[in-house]
Length: 633
Image (cartoon, rainbow, N blue to C red):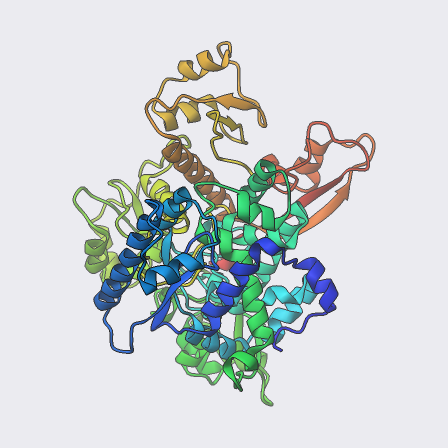
């Protein structure tokens, strides 16, 4: 058993309940993780996971096109059968049709079969990936256990990377989630440094600490581990909304009854998949036979006192640059290419000392190779007709490096006038840049108009979770992305009655811009007098005559994501402090003077507290912020 829990079996059952509504889902994911490898998979119903129509085997040599053809043909066969049952044709069946009909409970209606015809889905097998992840997990098992213990969290949570990435720190999803714990940029920035020099999502040690903090933040708000785990994928706001709409915090009822455009297959199955992954981890030899788990990767950390290049640092530490890179995956390509120094204050990880003090070795780096400042960035302003690949080629930068340096989720989304960071240095690059108009800042998107690429990124992230096509166009693990702003509990969705809850830093002008209408129209339908401002927490009605609710939500979420990302590029949350309000204390003065935290962030960590009516004795959670200075980049 790899993830030894401090809790008893009964205690674990209490923390991670298994209601009957999810039993079939847990059994299904157990099969996915143990029975079939990535050369095959399961054709199944998306909602009733007890219904598996066929186990496909592609063979070792099938191309992607051949796999697609096999899946398509098999899916069409079962769709035709289900449509036949939906027409009431239940007699004179072939042996195969009778088998499929028997998979469904007696009394299944024609309408239910008609829905099932649109719910045929393919899930790639994961047995080989799971086993490989099981072997890799030994490198970080002790660290993960210690982090969970230090945070006061159940050790069972350490099995989540089985679901997210198969313990692969190099994993990237289609929508830009990265690392062993699959953080998106918008969520990761709250807990880690993410830029074109350092991306801590890629470091299994740093990202584990961040994952523990996110899980603890989720739990502190909704007080349920099944919901906190699901919120890791679906977002804290989404789970709060599910609780409100279903009227319970029971995970079984929520999975069975909650209907939402964004609560797709991945979110609905995240907790059952976690339970299955945990079970398989605990009983690995039963499923895989003897497994040779890798030993812990023994290492130590030293804090760099100066900016230093990778090559002389590796030389001083008596390591190859390749080994130094292997131990420090958070450092980006710009560092290893020599275009950026390793930042001052960076916690460099090296193999555990073998009779040699790495700090003493560090002193061998000559003063001429130590620097007080980072190499400056160069910039390029996008001109009409330019593509990102053309810009990358012009400056001799890898396309993926340029995308990551600018936090782009998709290389197709750049706009005229946009300023791109060029993670390069050297006389040749400077000569190229000299002819560009890069000195002046380009016009930034106004707060009411998030950039088109930001809106597109939000929509793509949502579609990844909600697109339940009969056959997936590409095979991928279950959980490939977090919700945008997964740690933000604020509700940015539109209710069925076309109303929204006003959130911090939003105005009628914002809503009008995102809806493509005049502000006066919103005043009219809400009965607001001229110059009457909206109030955080109140509900107002919107007009969707020009823009539908899906696009409105994407624009609204993109605006909030850009605003919060800008903040977390300058500040990080070191800890959360519980403050008991005393008589006579002003919450706003506490936020301004004692804790120096913006009100919008204070609301996020106290979503169920009316901050305008706080009584003495109320416990308020205050984030403690740390300014991110030049030393970290």
